[in-house]
Length: 299
Image (cartoon, rainbow, N blue to C red; front, side, top):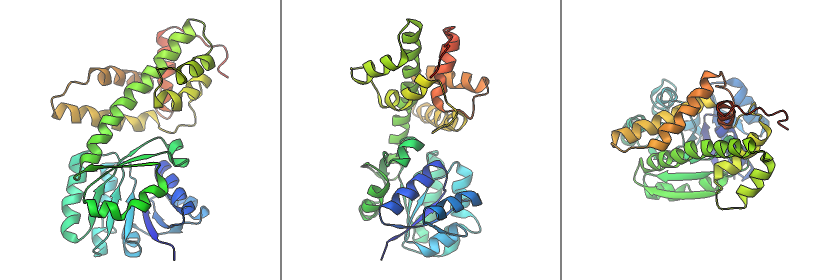
């Protein structure tokens, strides 16, 4: 019999994770506030649930992939939320990128109710999620984490145990600080090279085989080469949440992050251009304008 896994939140990341779990042999029972997302799950041979409560009543291990603190609060405390299920012994794998205060509030409420919450944020884009190219930073009760190992491996390529609850999110903030900077640095390199007359494809090949590459250069470089950001794997407006969370985290620690602060301004400029729904690689277009670089052919 297939192991049943619950999935709450079927957006870009959640949908991809659910699809990979189904391919790995799990039965996925999922819920999303958007009916179309549930239909998409059913098209992948997943099973629709009526609510978060319904998911909790039908599964022992649940993954949540949520866009906001409000969504987490509704998932846990809502009338049709996890606490309303009355079930004990459930493990909640919380993968969203949210502030630690919100996660701790949920953790403090779920623990006495007999639900083990794990803090397990992900590293990777939606496109990476689709091809099972995610890293997961697992934190919380170690025995519960070990029980979920096969589930983690069903939708990721790398599993790292970070320690006690909350350490996963802290590690995610450190990782995303680099994502923020490396995305802008990749764009800066492309713009400098193109302004010097170099072909962007040649720049990509040279850098990815040399010493200056980064994962963001490799992932977002093809979009920057094409100059086409209309099919986002991470939207600029959505990523503002991550930028803000990192800044708040560093500020609370009184830790300067000057490169992150400088990079954040380029994303803000992209918003000012009305590119909020474009991929974050569109920071390349911001720097092209600043450099007065006109590309006649973006193919």
